[in-house]
Image 1 (cartoon, rainbow, N blue to C red):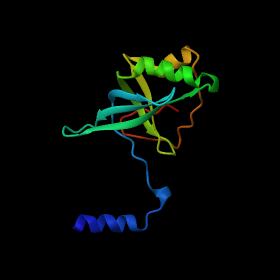
Image 2: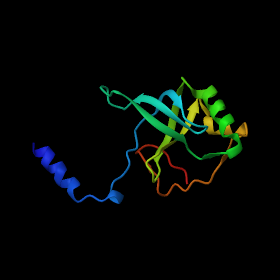
Image 3: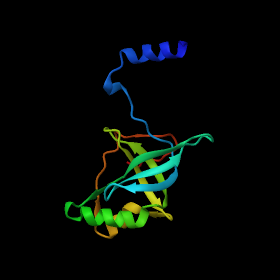
Length: 140
């Protein structure tokens, strides 16, 4: 009962801008759905042993899909990662709460595959306002 009262009092005067988005501490998972040429759902567990399986929507960090290549990028991304295990690094959350990550399949950067096949371009990413979990690397 005391925990509920304490939490209630903490939430009472909370402002939206004071709340941080959750950045999951994950390293790998299985892709269970592809939404677009740069966004997919990852199924995985958290670090603790009794963690249930969670799903996270992940957007590939640092790329932009060309408007004319959206469908082709989606088809290509589906072909290379759907139903497969991927590694995620540099996990972050942007100001909208979207989980961003560098994504690798068999040690190969998925963003570099999309760019080299002309489905995406690298974009300048302002990472100053991005939140990341301890131990991940943030390049500036």
